[in-house]
Image (cartoon, rainbow, N blue to C red; front, side):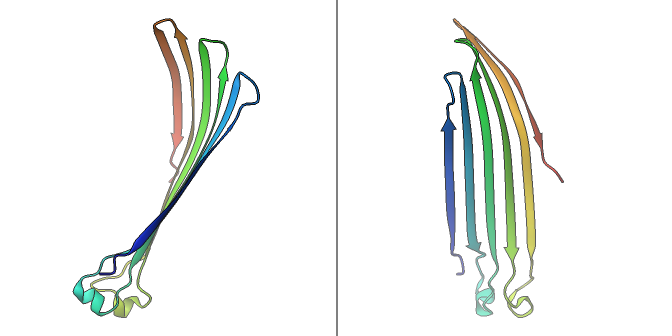
Length: 136
């Protein structure tokens, strides 16, 4: 009872190669889901209508540079934001049993990464690092 929902997703990647040594990429993603909170028989009897929505976007540009046939540099950045909304019924005093709740939460994460790869014969070396920040 009272347990419908839906989900939508979109993702795309754009690639651009200005010359033989450089490539630029842009990844983009968005998702959204909406759903009703399932009711017990008592909650259904008073038309409780609590629901939630979750949405997320993600953007990640990157650049690669080929120095020669053995060495590759990759530099990228990323940003992601998640949002969760919880909605009470239209009349929470009369419809929400045994309690009511309303909430909005978000989480943002952003950063960048870089690495250098070297391949020569059977030897492979990859050095790099990532910096990430999740503001409060």
